[in-house]
Length: 602
Image 1 (cartoon, rainbow, N blue to C red):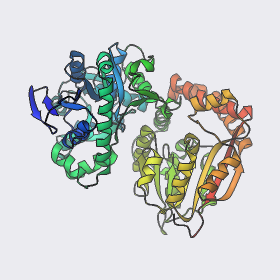
Image 2 (image 1 turned 135 degrees about the horizontal axis):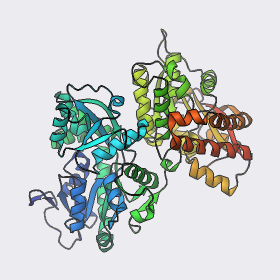
Image 3 (image 1 turned 60 degrees about the horizontal axis):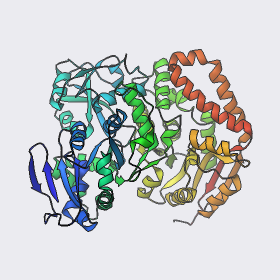
Image 4 (image 1 turned 90 degrees about the vertical axis):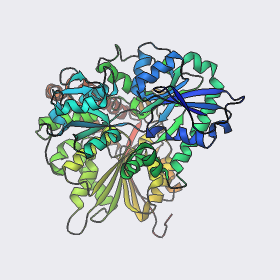
C-alpha cells in the first residue's frame, strides 16, 4: 500500500509495500488528521491485503472541497469527507454518491472570538459577522446551525465575511473585522491555550461528521473491491477502539501533535465505524441546514438518490421525528429563556422549573412521585436515561443535595443538541459537580459504566424509543446496586393498535415497538427485576395531552411572538399527534417501578 500526498505530488511507502500484485486497487483519500488513524493501522498491519484488496492512501490537506474535486477528476476512488459538504455536492446535481458512514460521532466546532474582543458568550454574537473560510464551507454552515438552534434568523441575524485559511480567520477576530469564527475544537485548542483567540462556546454537527463517497461510475466498476475495503477498515476500527495495547491515545498524540490530555479526550468521545449505511434523519437535517443557509436551492431531495444502493443502505433514526429533525426543543427553550430575561448569566435550577419541566407529563409532580417511589435522597447515585434538556436531572440534584451529601446524577441523552444545551444550563446553575451529562446511545454507553453502582435508573417517555427491551432491561439490571430501582413513565399498548396508529408512532414518535402492560412487566421480570408498581395512567395522560393542545392554541399569538410560526407549527403538530393517539383509545400510558432484589450483584 502507498501513501500519496496530492499537495506535494510524492508517493511515500506506508506499509504493505510489496505492491498490489494481482489484488484490485482502491485509492482512498482523506485529510491528514487523527480521524484517519485506522487507515494507517490497516495498512501497517496488512489488513487490506488480508481481505483481498490493495489500498493506496491519498492525503489531501485542503479538505472536503478539494477531495470532491479529486474524485471528480478520477484521481481517487473513495473520499472520506464532511457530511455537509458531500450532501451539498450531491444536492447540486453531482454524480457523487454516498457509500457509508466513517465517523458516526458528530464533529465539535469551537466558537472563537478575539483575545480582547467585547464578546463574552454566544448570545452576544447575534447580529454580528462571522468569518468563514469560503462560501458554503462548514464554518459557514455551522454558523447557520447555531442561528437555527438559538432561534435567530439565519439570514438577518448573522452575517458572513470570507477570510480564507485558518490563520486569516484568527487574525480577523483580533483586528475586529469579524466577531467570531468556527473551527474544529482540537485543531483550535492550541490557539485557545496560547491566548491568541478566546473560546466562548461550541456546537456539534447534528449529523455524523465524516461519510464515505465516490463517483457513481467508479463505485459500479469497483463494487467488489470496495466491499473488501469495508472489511479491512472495519477490522481496523475495531482494533482502534479495543486498544488492547493501551497505547492508542499516545499514538494519536504523537502522530498528530496533540497534547496527551487532548488526545485522551478526543479518543474517549469519537466513534469510528466504517459501515455501509447512512441514516435518513442525518441527511435530512443536513439538507435543511444547507437550504436555510442558502447554500443549496431546495431542502427537498430524494434521499435514495444520495446513496449507491448496491453498496449502501438508508437507515431510519430518531432524527426523522418531526420533533427532532429540526432543533425545535432547543430553539423553543432559548426563546422562552430570552423572553424571561434568563438567556445569560447565573441562574438556579428553580429559575428553570417553568421552562425545563415541560417535556414530561405533569412536570415537577412526576419527579416528586419518582423520588417517593424509588427512595432517592442525599448520597444517591442516579442514572437519568433520556435526560433531554436536563430538567429532571437538575431537579433531583438541586432538591436532594444538602449537608448530608449530594445526590449525583448521570444524565444520558442521545440527541447531541439537547445534551449540549442541557450541559450549558447545568453549568449556569452551578450543578455541574452533581450532574454529569453524557451524549450517546445508552445501550453503548452503559457497557462502559461500572456494574452495581446506581441506586436508581429513571426515565420519562424514553423507553418507548428503544425496541430492544431485553438488552435495555438487562443492562439496567446490571448497573443497579442490589435493592436499586428502575423507574419509567412510558407508553404501552392499552388495546391492539391499528396499522395507521403503528405507522404514526413509528413516523412521528420513533416508537417501533410497543408491548402491552403484561408483556412490559414480564420483560422486566425476565431481566431479574421484582415488580414494585405498575400503574395505569392512561386516563390522566389522555386529559393532560388534550389540555396541552388546547392551551397551546389559546396562547397561539403569544407563542408565535416568542417562537415564530415555524417552531409553533412543528411543536403543535407533535403535540396534536400524541393527543389524537390517546383520544383514539388504544395507546396507554403508565408508571413502571421495579426493583433489583437484595443479594443480587449481577
